[in-house]
Length: 231
Image 1 (cartoon, rainbow, N blue to C red):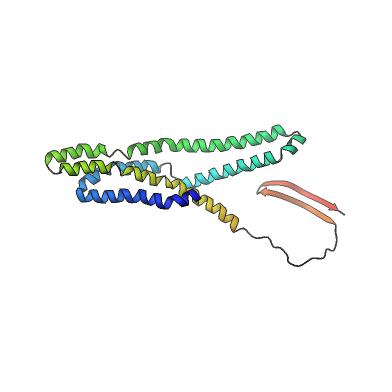
Image 2 (cartoon, rainbow, N blue to C red; image 1 turned 45 degrees about the vertical axis):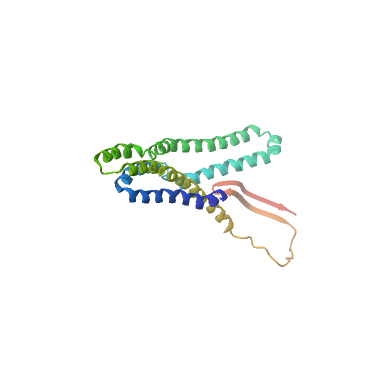
């Protein structure tokens, strides 16, 4: 969370302000050239939005598979003595490797689905010269655009797409913050255990369990109907 909170306000703000001020200045010079320089940006923006569909849900899924992998790693490392004592090395290692491979597979397929549209968008958005250069030359030749404004527009239009692309990268950070804050919030808002502040006199020192079941997660019961009596 620290990286996002520390950088999103100054960097995202500056990345948005620079192209906005550039566009306003170019509108003062010649509104026609501004519109020409902005043709490629919305096209690239639309293409880049394709992998962003359902991004928060996908990131939440990545957090889940990573947490599952981490819990298996901790369980495997922490219980290695018990695993060896009961000759369960192969079974435990298989579970361990399956979780690691599942985590890698999730990120691989997610990034693979994002690679092509993101690459295309990053290639298309900065191509402002495709429209401004030929049309601008025609306008200069016809006398409807001065050479000074034409050159200024060409130079400044090249700096519009870069900061906008940098600002769009914070979509990932925003999705990350939403998921992480939700996880932290669920922990902080969890119910507190009730601890008595008065001594209790025990009627008996016998320990009894009657048909006890237990699970760490819903649908994954670990203990099944355990009954026990210890005098």
